[in-house]
Image (cartoon, rainbow, N blue to C red):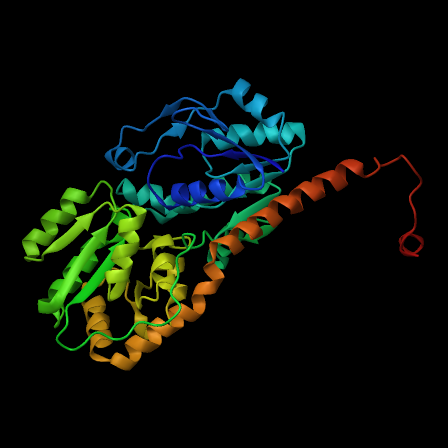
Length: 390
């Protein structure tokens, strides 16, 4: 299959970018994938000019928007079977128009929420969120043949804002080769406890809640806190930890180092208010780490909690501290939480997710071929339904 994979930035940070790199690498083992993106050109990679908004949050994420060059898009889309659009930004809107005109099947991914952009700008306006959802739904996702959602939660969001098109749920999956066969054992009463959080250093991730909760914990003296990630709030997070007198291991981790951090961790904490799936939560889950998750309405990863005792009130450090202390005080609950994650892990097997994505492509390609082969109305007399069935 010949696939055009359109993504503004493939070299930056963030879950939607990281998962795109993994999927493209896997798809290229069996398919012809042409990337349309910004950055350096290369084999199978056609580039367009990039531009950044003059915002610290965007620069810290190393994310560039792609400027749609019509001639480039026309050339690439003239030789493909299906078009995959990763983000609902200018580059994908232009590719969508050309694909529609050419009659090409289009798959559009729902990988970014308006809240991701607005919270990073310090804007908390529910009406603006709703407006953005409606705009993206009507002008972008409704014009695709199939929408890819990482979770049922993501599909529900788009349905609430008017989506009628078919949806395929395809998880971003865990990194290839990751997973744990057996549950973790509870830490000894006097052993150090390694608390890990992974994610962009951005406002919606609420690292401040985790810092304050660790400072309030009855187990504070034996807690070892680590944040893995990068983003615009790096300095702010370090300063906050220093004010609280908390030693903090904070770093941007390579894939190898990140896996080591998951192995070393005792518990994984995710305070994010906005997640369509939560790739870091998936990674922690397949590594058998007990999870403590915020119960924010826009946080899909809250559905991975083994029960209400592993959810805490979003934005509430005292609630998180109470959950953390309760978990460390109850070895049986700790073991059960780890066992729950190990049991859930197989559904995030990356090879399975790739096959699901391939089936989504095949589905729209077959539908497009059937539509092209169908007779034009008026080519033959209408056949009554009963005779057609006979």
